[in-house]
Length: 116
Image (cartoon, rainbow, N blue to C red; front, side, top):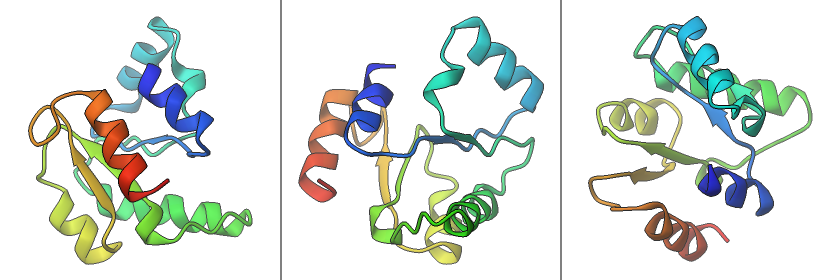
């Protein structure tokens, strides 16, 4: 939660790209009282995170929010989607949390160095 709050305080638009059943995700977010931390949800029970990210970026662009691909941050605990995201969306900054990046303070440092 603190990481998401920090990101938003630094101008980030925060979206979920969860590969789960939406009703389960929204119930969990509501249970933990954190659903309001997210600006957008691109949650579907499909592994097509690249397609959902493209749709989200198009939606934002339609609303006048144009984000260069080099400013898109993708955080995941698995790297199985990053190849498709980079191929179909572009060279986003990927934080492989709990693997290459051990905690959110380290993630903040990477973001400060590469995006801020």
